[in-house]
Image 1 (cartoon, one colour):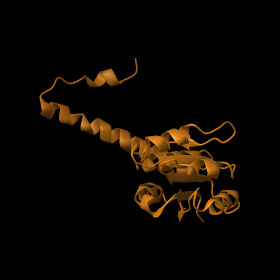
Image 2 (cartoon, rainbow, N blue to C red):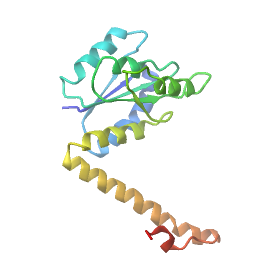
Image 3 (cartoon, rainbow, N blue to C red):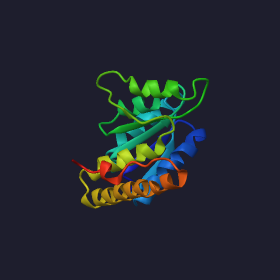
Image 4 (tube, rainbow, N blue to C red):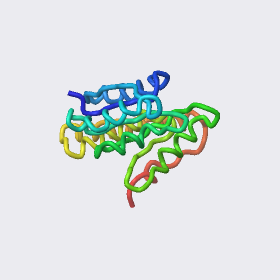
Length: 174
């Protein structure tokens, strides 16, 4: 049963949705993907928002470009967390969508990630779900530890660059 809903404003946004899908799949979290426009199919967007919780959805990722009304319309129709993913499009290349998501009126909260930030949106959704799911929380801790190890291993590249290296003890607590 899906616990994350991914809604995009048009089929052209499916490539961005794919990035979130890959991240959720990596953690074995079930999700669903749909297309509905806040402007062209507003009743579909409202109905999805109103029914998502009853169907077991815990977090909704709403991806849209241009005016990016989709996240706000979803949030107006549910009590679930809504994370906006502004999509780079139009003459402002997604800045308008980012500002639309960030400027929701009081009472209609929408979280937002950066432009085309679908992976971060999925990771944020996972953290929200992990707050009440010990197994997922452990998997998130493991993933974070692995990412930290990759950064630390990357420090070996400094020696190859002939640049002076920060001593390893500088990264430790005092």
